[in-house]
Length: 146
Image (cartoon, rainbow, N blue to C red):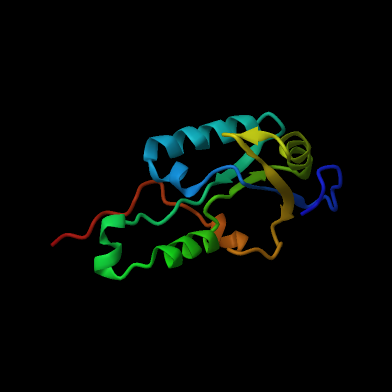
């Protein structure tokens, strides 16, 4: 991760924030919406936000872990590999992303210190950025009919 004062190139317009949220914060729809709005509003102070993604954990029924063979450790690893706990903010330009990095890195959010860095769209990450910023449908797909 780059220190907050060093911006490597002008094509880095994605702010990656770590240590902001935990999976438990993201499971409840209303709490997720509140966090999303808070992050979008705060990040919008530094430049025009083109897109914001906060990956959510896969919904799991803890009562069924023993019955269905779902391993809670494997489920946690899958969530981490999917970017759960991270915030990805894509700015219209690199100046906004750089300003946000300087302002937000090290700040506290929900009692946790934010770790942040800048990425370009071709940065190699896990999960890949093209999956993080994949187009989203306006509405969820319809449920299958019996």
